[in-house]
Length: 169
Image (cartoon, rainbow, N blue to C red; front, side, top):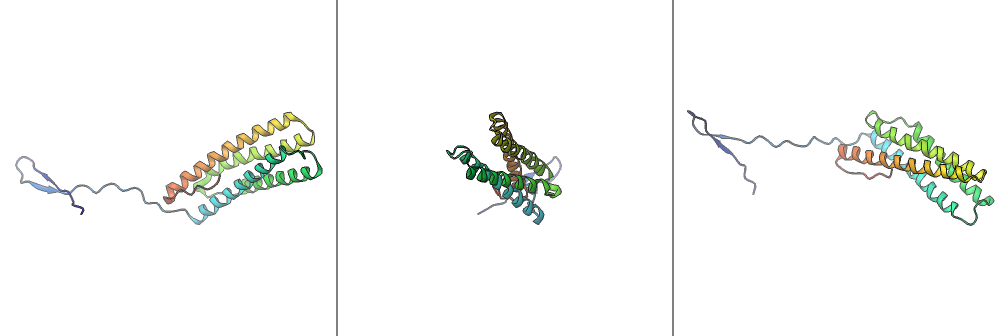
């Protein structure tokens, strides 16, 4: 059973009186994500997931004994195309004003993936290990930025809905 506490206050020359405690400060009301914010969050998460899936396949291809064969080249080209499409789709999105800071981080990451795909394509065509290493650096930088964008998205979602979405970055 909850009992409300009341303080008894006296001042010189006054009768004792009861003072109600001030109501506890409540947390700001969480309004939830708007439909535009929800749509944006889902769309960028989907595009980031497409890039990650393509990177997994590319990693497997790079370790394959079929490296450089015609079938291998077609599979690699297909994954590079998936990355370019996902990058371009993300960069063309107009985010809700409330999520611009998140979008800028996603775009930064996607630009690195776009550059990575370009370097990888040229590195494979030219059998140039230096270009392949540059592509790896771009991929690592892009991954770091996309992870940061995912953290910003989680924070935004938590602040606005009270539920952490854990959307894939």
